[in-house]
Image (cartoon, rainbow, N blue to C red; front, top):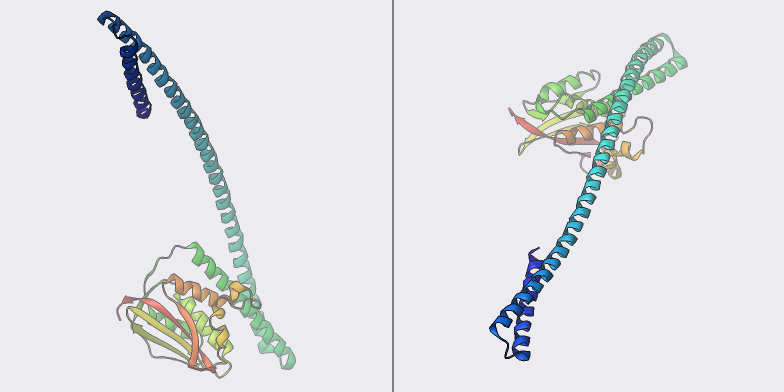
Length: 311
């Protein structure tokens, strides 16, 4: 608007100047009355021209503003329709999620009960049978136990993804000793610790899986050592075993094997769960040789946790 008025003023000034020069050149003897009349007439003509020019620009501006308002209104209506559609889809997803979780809860509960009964009968068969049939019964029992373990890991992963992390000080010594008690027939060396870490009730799953893996894959004579050390506000935990160890090319991939689908039934799920939990607590985990440079002398899983004080 100011630009248009500026143009009108400039054009008016030029025209008035031209008019005055033309009047002086062509009518040098014009009277004062004639000068006033001609000036008033020319000024009225310029005013009409200026008014028309401003009016035309206002019309253009009004038209542009009207188009912009209509476009903005259409955009707002489209956005509102999109928002309503997203809200409807979100409600459907929430309903589907609740229904799926209901089915999973029912399925998990029923399968767990069925597996526990099957495991009980498998143990009775192992105690009752002799020879080759007893071997078959033992393999059946191990398979059922593996299925129970997989189901437990899947349930834990669901809890991790659904729950908001609520970290709190957790006594590390109590957690470790509770998991060691689950392996009464395996020699596990642990000197104790007075440290507390930032974690939650799922911390037991970390030690349960690492110690359980060492027992499962370490062989009948495996020895396990759990170490706890403090360094710069962190707690370094090591779970070492005298088993067959981990090849160098697998030391990183072993934590991602479940995601990469390079596994058998349930293989890699436990370490995948451990990696998720350690990351949830703000730590990191890796695998090393128990004896540096000698993979065949056993593996060492090391991970860090944030110290909560009390060390």
